[in-house]
Amino acid sequence: MITTTTTTTTTAATASKRKRSKQDNAKKPSTLRQRNDTFWVMGNEESALYFDKIFSGHSSNHYLDQKALTKLDGNGTPQNCWRVFSHKTKKPADSLLSTASYRLSYVWSVLVKPELWGEGIDVEQLRASLDRIKTKTRDHTCHRCGIDWCCNPLHLRVDSRVENEADKHYHYFLNNADPQVGLCFREAFSDLMLKRGVW
Image (tube, rainbow, N blue to C red; front, side, top):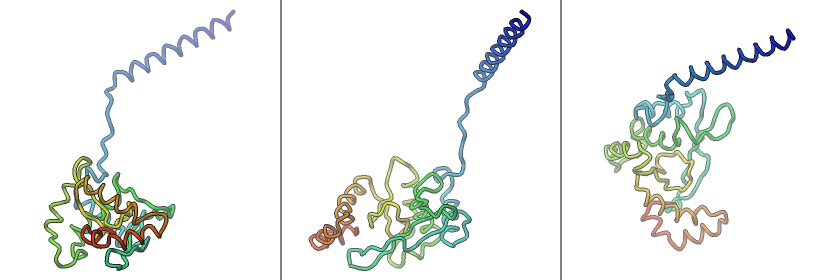
């Protein structure tokens, strides 16, 4: 009889404690964790310097392979696609600071390495385009090479979603699993490729 009373009392006490715990948690206001280490929150300069460490080989977390893939452009000139990799896993790191690595490389090229673009390119116009990719609802960072992980800034341009989708139709054929399809398309539509600046 004593054992039964003790067990009943303990069970009631435990239930009462759980109830109080739930009530206390219900009173606490729910707060979302605010992250300050993402591309969407950080300033362009800070994002550019983050990628510069990777480019210069000073990052402890990532490294850059500037010859991850080689493609021929519309003139038949070899173009190297860049890709970021993790030091730890040796696997691709196509997402950095909660965005695609190519967005960081584009910002980096404009703010830190403008000479990369060469003569004849209006860097101030490129600089003005940075705010247009700092949102998920406006312009896109389009790939001339059609390789969605490529972060070679010279393979990128800022344009509308419609133009980005149009590029994908070209790249469907140019990057087809059957190499013969790409060769035939290149021969038939080389003028259009040069005019659009895709390969």
